[in-house]
Image (cartoon, rainbow, N blue to C red):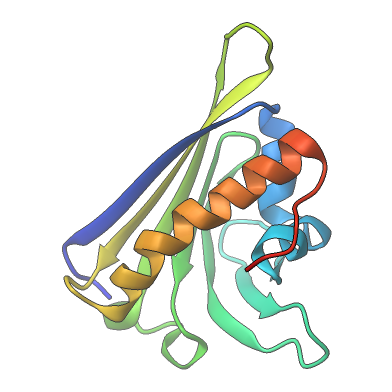
Length: 151
């Protein structure tokens, strides 16, 4: 989407970077709070897909793993499947994990940065409420062991 709009969100989760990393990548976990499976081997240059957790397994987002520094940083390209591979229609998402030394820990700061978005686009509006909701779901899952029904 090679635009100049961006979105950033930071959340603190009472969990280790290892638990959060697994929560971002493991299809069994993403299915619980995202209702999708994130599928890849998570190596730089590999494709990844964001598939619905239903019988059809419809791919809603596709891209490539740009960077994968286990337990600290993951960068993905992000586009609807029909636009995957088209730089003009592709944005980028970075997940950055930083352990925090706080009482009652372990705590980890998770920053989600979604860049290269077209200003005032449908994607920008969608992710502006989507990322906070999803990361709150991940936080709840990791801190309590489950999430309730989604509205």
